[in-house]
Length: 271
Image (cartoon, rainbow, N blue to C red; front, side, top):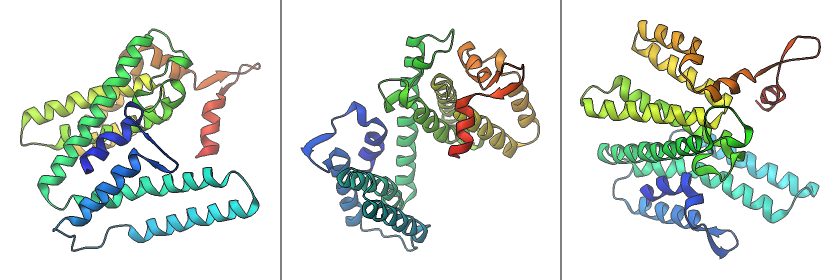
């Protein structure tokens, strides 16, 4: 059931979801089944769940915000309750996976499955990018992978790939036991990097670049220098459409001064 959650959650658009009952869907059923199976396990963790108190505090904060909104009469009660449930449910996956992985074999199985799902999702974004064409950037030609049917979810996809990129990169840089594993990890690194390019998410570009330099720095001094050279000369090796997207970050106003574009400026407000 836990493996089923790993496959299903990022790929919900590719699977049935609605069961015809309000508040009950496939994800809820898989979640409850995984929770029940985990509870039945004979092996129990001898230590408390890390960050448990902080998560509970966050849940209370979400619930408080929900009740304040209802007292003010803002929004729709059912929709707000659904948002609250969804916010809490996805975070609860942390507890399920923590208690499901109590031995090395299970941890490795879950880790490999996470990498496989991320790899397939990356291939989906690459296919979309190639279908759109990579000669020139166009807003509506941004890949969303399994997270959307159009460009509207491209930023979400980009962040997803940026989150899982360091898993592949870490295995490639630090795993020493089997060369084939490192080569597979290198392949995954290349696929997710390409997927990030085709989402044209500039915040994901920044995250990926930071991750690359940080992990290279953990290996020594020469590799980070090589990474800096690659990043400074990105226009020589990344797709032309991605170069256009990066160059859009700054625009020239009517007085000839460079300014951040509206989308980039809004990020600082959101952050």
